[in-house]
Length: 209
Image (cartoon, rainbow, N blue to C red):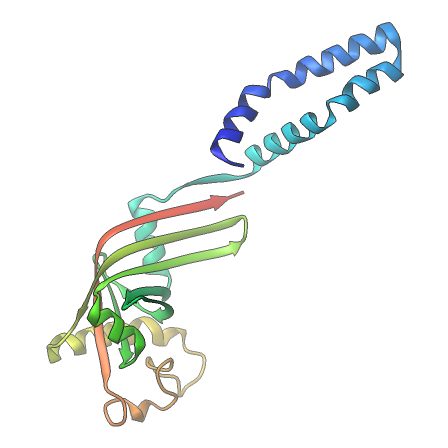
């Protein structure tokens, strides 16, 4: 329901008791037929008001606090990265780690890396969806930065390994499984691009029963 519709509905809700009082008076004075007629003539309005009141009592929409956004970003390991350059917009899921200020991830050379090098301003989304009426989501904006130093690359990869590998279900799984099936390809056939997103803005929303 849109904001104007909600305001109208809130203003009209007191009318419902008046309708039922009037119907009751007609029932006593004129009989059930006329009382039913007055209710049926306003049935569309009554139904909309009951739907509005029921939804209002069941559903709550709101904004996540900074602490709740941090908790969601630290709890999840997969987000959706959005980038744009040369008239092309590209959204792709990536595994990541979060340190409170940055998103860290890695990739092979490809479309998203090429786009981020051309335009480092990116968007990143993380969510936890239990069902369509119970979910929470964080969207953040930031700047892509490629990590060049070997020591920092190793530190970031260690963080990614420690975060992802406890979730592995197969003994031969590796942290770059989304890039290549064979761990031995990394550093031989495939060079990794390790990067961070420096967060500049973020927002979080939720819906709950």
